[in-house]
Image (tube, rainbow, N blue to C red; front, side, top):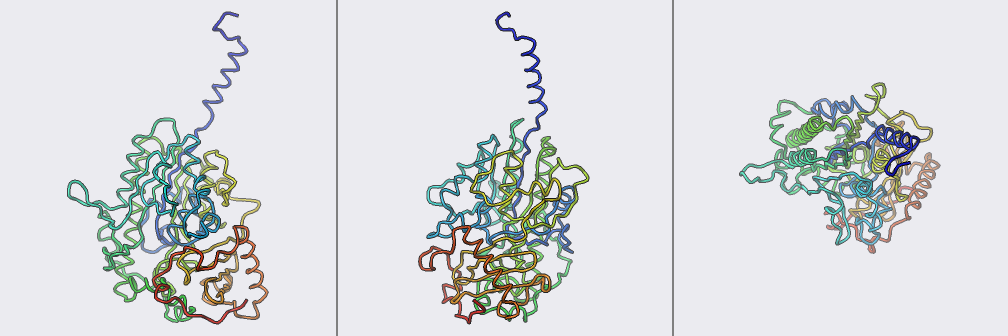
Length: 492
């Protein structure tokens, strides 16, 4: 055989190999839109009677929507840490410096895993994860820019202002315009909206500043009052919840009918502003020829009370705080699989495992969530979770709690109360969680079962926290002023 010439069998083998390589599908791109403080029902496709979200609605109609999506901790920075690390807060926090993430958990965050697998990675918008000194978020990505609020309207070089939501979309479009051909990418677009501007409590554009593109939207609409806004519902809360930051912030936004109308209209405008930004990015994907292999995920870091129960914010254990929107559009899905509503419990901790699954990247053993890909692709799973562990380890001592949300029962205990205060709700008979069954002897057996389930889940993630005086949890304004009143135990 002459030098430089391959035998025919070798040429044939090489040809087969090249054909297989050419036929192998490129890993999908992933665009992850992440809103801040958006409750589960504030999308048109989820049945909201007023809000206009046509782009996200279309993604749901051409993809899938999870009707029972939850976060494991209902607060911005922790939920984002859960999504990045793939671990519950109790697994990833430094026990003496809550809510700071441990160096070990930082070493396996999903953008680093995808980047090591050849993905080009970008992150624009809110970051907010509490990291040890010396950790540099920008070093974890190919392109990174933190874009926060305070203020939402950013001065530009030409003397104009531009909303944070629009700036995030601008950076995304620039990223897509410079995307190398043939390389997969993962792009985090993490909005601050519709989070309130905490430092400006003027109703409307002061407290919930909206982009110029949605100016005047909903001005002609009268909003229904909060469905769970009856003062009697608030009065039934234990004293420590009635004095918590959930109640304090109610007076920032909703304590008069006029403030409620003004602020909720503004909040909905911010969501519609996000929808328009999503539409701009989707159009940029199409222009760049990337849409056919790009999976789009839309979710939020926690829910929001919007005046229900006499509350504002999130943090506590009720459905309005824990439940979030989750829409996933995968252009590779066959038409018969699109437009579905999936009712299995999906969690924010599942998202990084899902991203790595899509990319064909082995999941780190530290990840605690499950890939949602099988549910999206087939709509069925032989075994899926029937409950999940949830918690809030911050804002001690008023809003630190741990619990389990099951298909029928919800259990929560606020463990920094002395003694701990327990809740038990029956979602079948009381879907609004208005009745606390924990003190009722008739439900003692169920209380015992849910308490034991909570203990098992807690112990699987490192067990109980250090005593309050030995951990670095933040304290709410109410706690700094003297904390909650000591209460009679419910049942223990």
